[in-house]
Length: 246
Image (cartoon, rainbow, N blue to C red):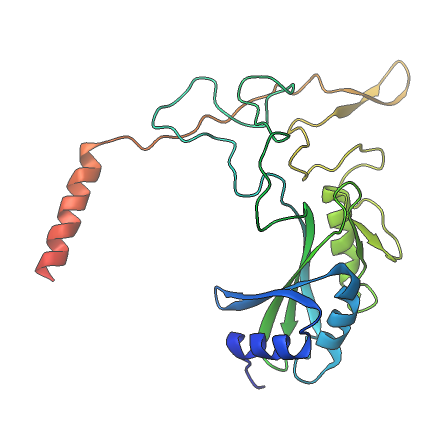
């Protein structure tokens, strides 16, 4: 088994797919490429079949929601608050509610939804990460990779269920984690943390009924604050003394 170094792999990818890759980066000892949706299947097929790559196995596929990327819900502060901050609150104007609609778009992230694919080559002892953005935000659609790696089947169903990404050409695209009657996609950043509806068995109607959430109390997360403490000052002083001694 040979071993392909990340930099060597990145150079091979740039040379082979120059017109199909929008970006190639190296981070944490692994190459990441961005592929347009129109060329995703073509590039992945070549990565599987060509001797320079030979990525036999798809180890993971997941969705990403870049809504509010680079911004935080918790404002910078050196004091604590009894109200807290988080999306667990209800209503669009409740205290602590983050204003997603008024956000400024991130200059490097122009689209909201993407799928990330992790590949493994046993022949070259190499790993590769592929990111592909859905062209549209309102209805994110990407081509399925089940024809290239059958293991993508359940991963794509999961991304569809949790993020609402539609994988065109998937042989059986349906929910895999949530209930058949579930409304919405729980991993989207604008989805309420307590959900929209709950189900229960109604003994009088003798059936399962859907109704607005009433049994879950919305809660917020109070930000933890690092406060000045003599213990940390003592620890820093001791560490500095140890460094001088060594």
